[in-house]
Image 1 (cartoon, each protein chain N blue to C red):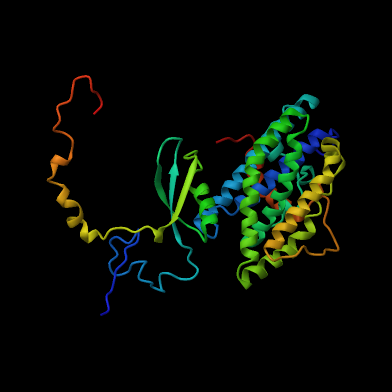
Image 2 (cartoon, helix red, strand yellow):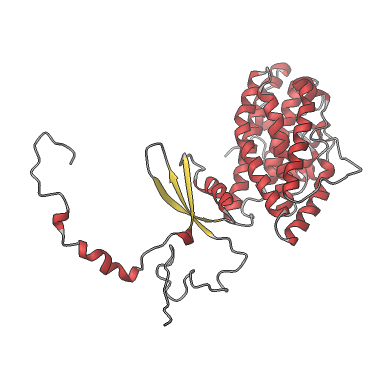
Length: 122
Length: 255
C-alpha cells in the first residue's frame, strides 16, 4: 500500500498547494540558496531567541550573514543557525486537536494552593 | 588645501593609511543596494563603513598634526573633501573599478591580507595614537580577511563559470598588488625593518588562499606603482569628482 506522508517544514503554513517541501522546480531553482533560521543570545545568562531568517550557501556563509544582518547594532554575543528544512512544525490543521484540550484543565495550573504570606513572587 | 609638499613621514604615512581606507571604502560602498543578494549587500556595506571609520581615525590624527605644524585649521573633512588627486597617497589597487562581484571580493581580499599584517606591526608602534587606531582596526580587518578569503575560495573552487571569472579578475588586479608591499621611504621611516616580514606574510597568506581556491599566482611582467607618491590612474579622478562634489559646489555645507 502506498502512503503519502506529508512533511511540514518551518515556513510552510498557509501555502497548502505550494509548499517548499513539495519539491517544485519552478520555485526551487538551483540558483536559490537554502533558508536558515537565526537565533541570537543578547547577553550572558539569557536564552537564544529567534530573530529571523536568511539565505546562505552553507553554514559558514550563514554564520557570517547572520553576523552582518542581525548583529550590526550590538544585538548579541552568541549566534546559533539552523537550516530551516531541519525544523519540523506541526500541521496548523491539527491545532484544535493539539492545543484545545488543554484549555479547560485549569487544575494543571498551580493556583489552588494557599500560600504563606512570606512567599512572594509566585 | 594641498598636502603634496608635506615632508613629515608620520603625516604622510597617516594620509596614506587614511587614503587607502577611504578610497577602498568608497569603492565598496558603490555596491550598496546592488549586491547579488541582500545578505551580501549588507556584508560589503558593513565593510565599507568599517573602512570609512578607519579613514576618519587616521585623518583626525593627521589633521591634528598638520594643524599644529602649519598653524592652519585643518579637519578630517578638509583632508577628505578638499584635496586633489595628486595629494592622495592610496595604493592604485584601492581605486581600481569594482568590476563584477568576484573582482571586488578578490581586490578586497588582497588588500585585507596586506592590512592584516601591516596593522599587526603598527599595533606595536611607539606612536601611541597610531598603535591605538591599529588595534581597533585590526578586529574589523580580521573579519574582512575572513569574509573575503571565503569568497575567493568559494568562487575559485565553484563552477567553471565562477572560476573563469575569478581567473580573469586575478589577471586584471594582480599587476597592482606589488605596490602594496613596495614600501616607500615614509613607510619605512615609521615601521622600520619589519616591512620585510609584512611582504613575506602577505605573499604566504595569498598563496594559501589562492591554492585552496585552485588558483595560481600569476606571473606578471609589469607592475603598476606610484599611488603612494600621488601618481594615480584615471579612476581616482572620477571617484573624487563624485565624492567631493557637494563640498566643492556648496563649500562648508552641512546636514
